[in-house]
Amino acid sequence: MLRVSDLNVSIGPIPIIRNASLDLEEGEMCGLIGRNGAGKTTLMRALMGVLPATGTAALNDIELLALPAHTRVAHGIGYMPEDRRLVPQFTVEENIRLPSWTTEMGGVEERLSWIFSIMPEVEVFRARRALELSGGQQKMVALARALMAGRRILLLDEPFEGLAPALARRLGEVMSSLKGQGVSILIAESNDGHVADLLSRAFRIERGSVVKA
Ligand code: ATP
Image (cartoon, rainbow, N blue to C red; front, side):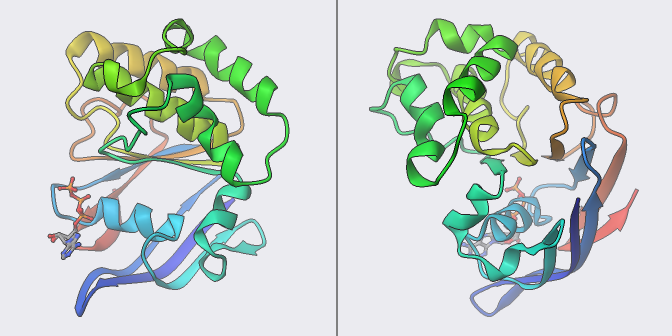
């Protein structure tokens, strides 16, 4: 489904990602495991089109790197940034709907109902403004928003980072319920402690190079 080959990303003059290759099958959950600074965020941002990159990133027969960032979302790619990036003044529901405002997207109401069915706790605070939530609750909302766009591929950047144990367990349950839903998921983590049971495979990233585990 997603095949990334020879991906190179530089920030300014500095090469950060070097000839990275990885692949995700349909419905598969894979890890991207590497210590801080290894390049996980940079790789995901390049796939989203936030950073320029060379190489190939084929989603079925579509070459993502040739597309501007906003049209990548329209192809069903959702991204949950490590720092959440919610719009503080918007309500939870508005934040989740946000990707559907910026791209042509059908079936928004059904998708929202489905998201609330797997994360009922998020529905409970749908009318609250994002700034009123705890950091952990905001992470759940960021995942919900990524699910609105991510009908084929989900890129989750350290989703467990900073979560209290109870919320981390709950997030693990939510992730587990995403298995078998046809969405391919790449989870970046600094170690695979939280996610090992969920993953079918893991790629290790070291100083910008990806090696299979
Ligand atoms: P972390 O979890 O700490 O974010 P990471 O694996 O996601 O780690 P990246 O954030 O992708 O790593 O960073 C990879 C490398 O790129 C690091 O050496 C970092 O210092 C460098 N880097 C990232 N962003 C920039 C930037 N805007 N300018 C210069 N260097 C950068």
